[in-house]
Figure 1 (cartoon, rainbow, N blue to C red):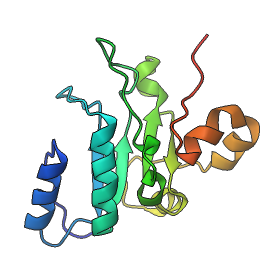
Figure 2 (figure 1 turned 60 degrees about the horizontal axis):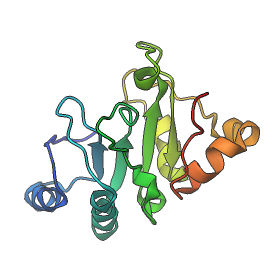
Figure 3 (figure 1 turned 90 degrees about the vertical axis):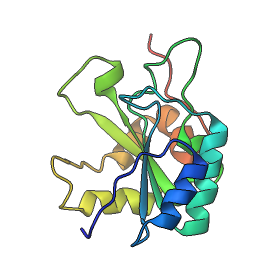
Length: 161
């Protein structure tokens, strides 16, 4: 990979400013909300602005939704993929290890843009990434869980019983 620049961005306005000030221009925007360790949270409106930004600048968005279930005071973490057009510009990762107290298991999945999803599995420069393309199997065996989620319409996994 080429040179990288990591900056903390907390608003879509800051995102646009950082993008304009960075050279070479970023090709990927990695976001993480609810954020760890700052606990920053966003609403769906924030993700709408991120999708617009990504389309305007041809940037891929990777959203880490690892802490979606660890929220308080009635807040529900929105999914990046709830926004119309989000699937066109990015992917979202979810992990079972945080919410289900399975540290070290590294069990999760990725939904969203098929080309981005596939290219992540081919990148040999992502240390520790073990990519198992189980999307087709999951969709075939668990359509009630994956159909809405992977179509980006905001459907969520069923509640645990």
